[in-house]
Length: 265
Image (cartoon, rainbow, N blue to C red; front, side, top):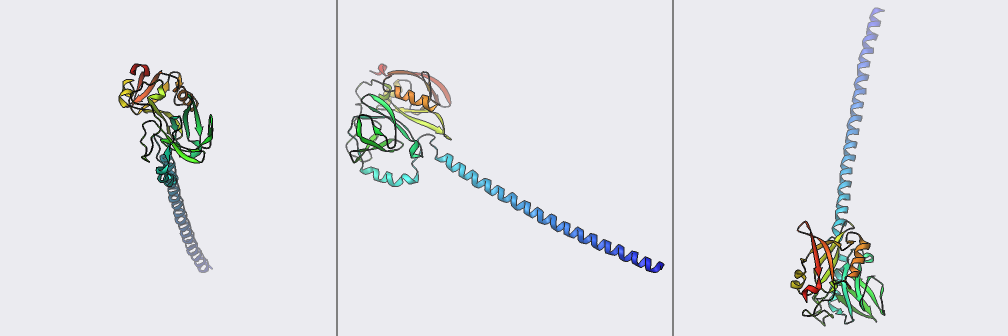
């Protein structure tokens, strides 16, 4: 009996060890599989973040920071633009809010000494047969009784080399800020950063006011130019004001500039 008991005990211990080895083996396999699965999830999450980051970067690059570039979708239209003549209507383009979303682009146009913001599809005041069909970075296309025409900033080169748009002669005295300043809204990630100021007409006349081409104005008189509604109100005053105080960003520094067009007569 003692021999049988010892044999049974030996067999039991041996089987127990075998069972423990099997359990440890399967636990090890499960741990390895789980580690591989966790590693795969980690790699997938990194790839997903990279794709998302690239997508966000792509969107940011298309936002209008300075003067946004035309998107590829507009390439065909741009090629056709060479056949569009500049409009001979008594209109003045004062500023453009450019966006890659056509519905968000706006232009401020002066008609009969009244400045107003217009969007694509709007009809011009006092000209019911003239409608805005497209707003580009530097020009506006209109439908004038079925004829496509362009309104450009004064002194903007005519890429069609045809009849020039009506403009203020260089030797005539300016009467308002809109006679010497071209404005463009500056956005970064859909937030208005200010209004870029450039010369309309002779650069020397613009510089004589104390401004420099490319100055970014963040305030005009009491109008903060980093708030869209306030900036639009300020630009509408350009047509009537002949002087204003600007706070501009130049070379990374703020500068206060008192501008008066009457000083250049």
